[in-house]
Image (cartoon, rainbow, N blue to C red; front, side):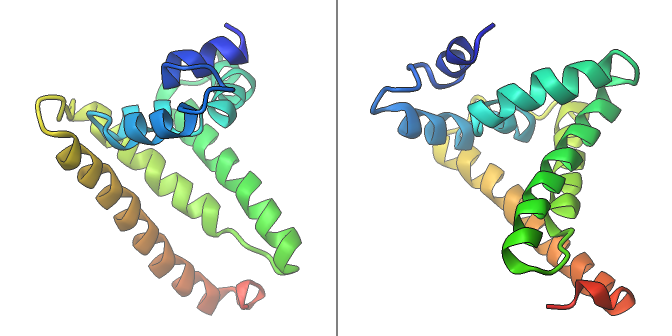
Length: 153
C-alpha cells in the first residue's frame, strides 16, 4: 500500500483534499477505542512508523512488544527534536508515548468498544486518556528530574 492509499484509507479523502485535516480529527477523536485512535492520528507519520519500525519488529518479537517499541521510538524522535531546540536533554515524549502504548494495549485487551456511543462521548474518552497519560508523564518526569539533574530545565 502506498502512502497516498494509506492516507485515503485512514482519512477517507486524499492527502491534498481540503477535508483531510477535518476528517483526520473527526475520525481519530471519535474512534471507538484508544487503539483505533492511533490508527487515524497522523496517518503520514503512522505509515512510516508502521512499515519501518512496527512491521519489521513484529517479525522477531510479539506484536505487543513491537507496538510498545514503535511508540517509544516515536517518542524518542519527538524528544530528539525537543532536545535540539531546547539545547537540554528531554525524555518526556518517550515516557509519554510509552504510557500511551500501554493504554493502547489495555484498550485492546479489554476489547474497548464505544462504537455505539455518540461521537462526543468517544472523543471525550480519547482526550481524557491523552490528558491522563500526559499528566502521569509530567509527574514521572518531575520525579526523574530530582534523580537526574541533567533533565533540569
